[in-house]
Length: 247
Ligand code: SF4
Ligand code: F3S
Ligand code: FES
Image (tube, rainbow, N blue to C red):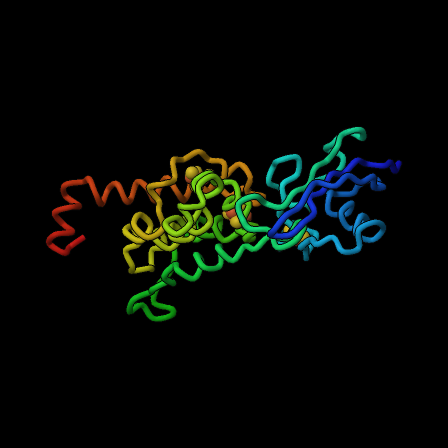
């Protein structure tokens, strides 16, 4: 059975904006993105919204729904009561371009800074990966680059000044993935700590909580990476080995 839902949507550009109220038809089985599309089709043809797959796989439709970072296409209307006002705002950490669309180029800049896989002298076919190593990187590879983890991490959400020194959970996870790859010869511990700001992460786990792919970003990437960095810094044998050039 359809009903009229109360939607409050942020409208504006990088200069200014405000929340606007609407009443929009909702039908059974719909998600927030369906309602935003109906709003666009019937009342606000110029409403800017980024989306692509409508299946939780392209990572385009990130927004904050009632203050929680979510994918609009995976947020079922049935999770709200019919008399609830549903507030949809752009993700807060990145600058607004217009309405619900933000400029996420910060993330692409950080992605470009991650040194790529370096297999050393290993030739294709010379190396056989253990299943456990395959599974470890496959978890990280499920990332759809929705940047919800980047949006929610307080290190940049509340402190814009950290943006130059902090890559955010998605890219620290990428560094960790490569560091844990058995065939990658590069030592990525200093990169993680000095260039990507691993030390600024204080393990609040908000990134893990919002990840639509349920990747255990903190437990499986960030904490193991911190342990590797601590091992290099504080283990006297590792320290001595690094001085002698054998670790
Ligand atoms: Fe999105 Fe999860 Fe990837 Fe972060 S790690 S960008 S939350 S899919
Ligand atoms: Fe931020 Fe996640 Fe660490 S939210 S502080 S990167 S555990
Ligand atoms: Fe692709 Fe939502 S539209 S993840």
